[in-house]
Amino acid sequence: MKLDPKKYDEMVKNAAPPSPVWRDCVWAFCIGGLICTVGEALRRLYLLRFDADTAGMFTSVSLILLSAVLTVPGWYQKLAARAGAGTLVPITGFANSVVSPAVEFKAEGWVTGVGAKIFTIAGPVITYGTLAAWVWGLIYWGMNAAA
Image (cartoon, rainbow, N blue to C red):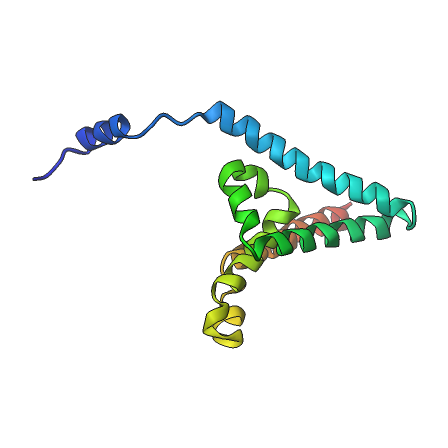
């Protein structure tokens, strides 16, 4: 039996539970804000001992380490399942995207498992982020060279 695409869309819409979009957005905003608040608290703590640049560096490293530690037992994934994009946007989401495949494929070995799979999620972000930085850097350089 071949279904008409419009009929299929209607069947899917009727079968799918309604998504609480506004509630999900508010929840993601709150969780993302909480992660950033933890980062700000860490930064202020580090500012008691270090200059602003060093405190910022230690804050980033601490958030990455905290995310990696929470990823290994699967706690970060449980938080992400409930908070959605609130956990993806901050630096902790990027750290999670690097550590998750490493944990998942560790059983396949250090080279063919961890080494080969560690950047499967983060690799495209790094690649296109670097490419975008080069393009915008060349545009910036070209605009300043012309002036």
